[in-house]
Length: 130
Image (cartoon, rainbow, N blue to C red; front, side, top):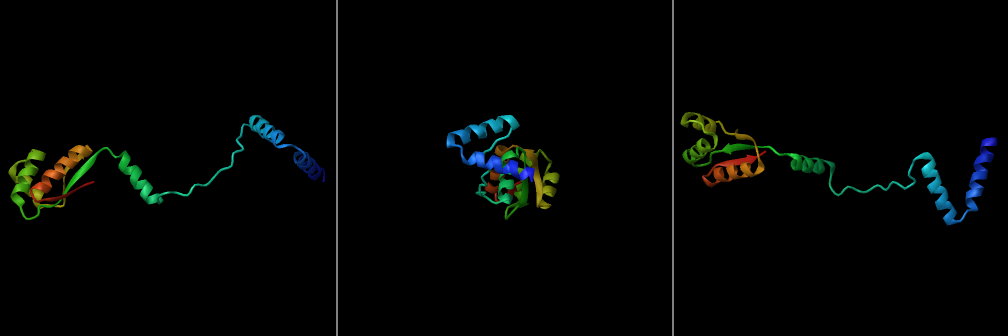
């Protein structure tokens, strides 16, 4: 019963305090117990967690792979571009192009990946950046 009396007395004391006195009490308690009395407000996410993870992954990603999906209607021009990009011989470049989907270049910067993809698309190939 003594515990209830202590709590009751504290509550009665607080009820009699002014707003300024309450503010000072809160500040003193924060300092004494090294805590913050600010309310935690839940903020609704603006995007779904999956979209947020993908955005973070994209932002952090510094190395990209260029994947040839298909050589399209014009295999020979695509082989020529792949040879220039990879420094492969004719036979190796032909085998690489014919084995699509396959990686043409791996771990390149975003700018370089975009240039490679643009060159492949210009000659009729289909590729994507991962």
